[in-house]
Amino acid sequence: MHMADALISPAVGGSMLAVTAGLIGYSSKKLKENLDEKVIPLMGVLGAFIFAGQMINFTIPATGSSGHIGGGMLLSILLGPYAAFITIASVLIIQAFFFADGGLLALGCNIVNMGLFPCFICYTLIYKKIVRGSVDRKKIFIGTTLAVVIGLQMGAFSVVLETIASGISALPFKTFVLLMQPIHLAIGLVEGIATSAIILFIYNAQPELAAGPAGINESVSVFPAKKVFIGLIAGTIIVGGMFSWFASTHPDGLEWSMFKTAGVEELEGPEHGVHSLLGIIQKKTAFLPDYSFRVSENAPKEEGEAVWPSVNAGTSVSGIVGGVLTLLLALLAGFLLKKRKKVAGNN
Amino acid sequence: MAGITIPAIYFPEIIISKIESSLQSLGYMDLLSYQDTALHKIDPRAKFITSLFFILTVVSFGKYEISMLMPFVFYPVFLLTAGNIPAGYILKKILYVSPFAFMIGVFNPFFDQNVILHLGNTGISGGWISFISIMLRFALTVSTALALIACTGFNNICFALNRLGAPKIFAVQLLFLYRYIFVMAEEAARMVRARNLRSFNGKGKGIKTYGPLLGNLLLRTINRAERIHLAMICRGFDGNIRIMNKYKFGLRELFFVSGWISLFLIFRFINISQLAGILVTGLFI
Image (tube, rainbow over all chains, first blue to last red; front, side, top):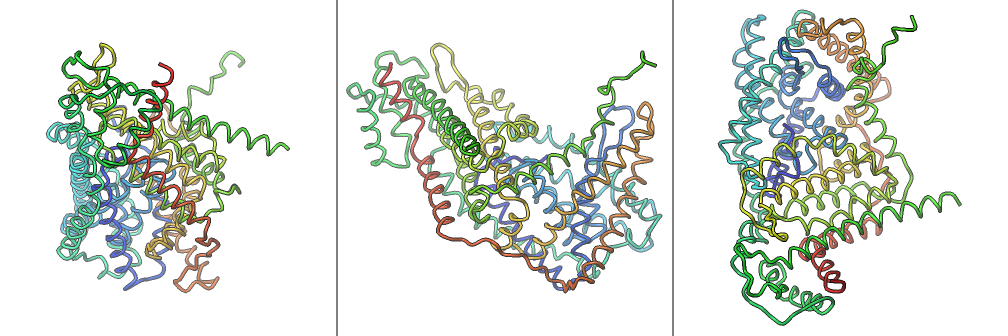
């Protein structure tokens, strides 16, 4: 459920990145306040453990498929929410860079979906509430599984919200929700059982590790939810506003295409080749960002044969030809440069 | 015994597990980042900022945009060429991770059937156009992220993050994490191999062995972290890790960043593809 750059808008990606940066800064500050310096290598190595552990599968009986751990909840139980959040964010960063799971702009979305919900919300509000007082196996099992399942449901729902808010996918909200939530209920159950199997093993072997954050002062594991959320919402609004100019410089694609269907009426003398190119450059400088005005002006051929919806064929064809040409040119440039380099290397 | 040699293909999991192949690709990307091209020598901050701006610009287009995205291909191609990174390898990686964007994008043709483009007699619906646009964005952003890491190296990215204001604790444990991924993944790969070799017909791979398997790995991990910490104290660790600063943000970096960013802005607001198309169709057709 890693979000991809291709599916989000700058406003959504930017605000989520800002939220993430804020949370990482806040968590680091909290950790620094009562830092047991032992925790830095522990976080790093546990992050590597999660990374490797996610690739070890177990078979699920009667389905033929296999499952693995998620990570956020396991880290929270072992390290407390702040250190866990930083660690899971790091794991996601490495996955984004090396395996292109998600993307750089979508990183904020992914860290929120897979870090914020399990570490801050489900760990503090579900796991901690169930597993307290006298700890036993049943409490650990129920607490862990429930927290993982709900965390994943929140994450999946958040994927839906981010995708819908970005407006790149045409999936309707209801269909998308019905698609995501049940799948992630099943995945959540599997991840929850896997996570509790590990925690239960640790509880048997070294109960003090499973009982609370290792090597971290207990006070650090309390999360002032209200304060942080007010900050988060404020940050989202500010950054969302800042980034939205990016999105609004151009009309939405649909409006643009509607203009094209309706607005092709102004015809001028035939313009071809270099002449039209110069004309267009000149017009471009006049109307700069509003390209909905430009598109209609270079296709005089369409006169009289306006079949509905009369999209300007001339423009489309030149767009396609030019697009393919640009692509080829870029690839060719790369190829030639590489070849030249090789020749130079041989000399 | 000559008649019963079993082709290796029957045991793909034993021959090479998922962990090992991930480890291999991680190691290969790491290796690429140790090259010594002019691009590798540029301050990581410059490459990081430029690539982030690139991604931001690419995703800022409306959902039906295809032709204006084309010129953006120049940037990843430049990174791959100047950084001497094998393009085929990066392409393979892009294909390997495409399922999520594909799965979400492929619904567009079903839900958005308004015909918005005519090519001869065939109408092309908005859904198909936005689907192509999604896949194009996907290829552009992913190839840039992969090329960035291959021409910069993860340690330098951590350095850049730190210098750009990320908290030190965060940067330092990111470095730790990266260093120990190689160690942990090798250990995990050995465990998986051992389990596979002892399992017949898929038996013994269920949750019953999984818990203790990962639990043991986890306990060893925690012990390892303690040893590492002790070793660090022996070498004078005082809670502060000093990251060496071997780069300088100089004139070259300034040119790199401002040059590319202005190019992205030109690509963003002027439809180069269409201009080229008009030029060509006007001259030859």
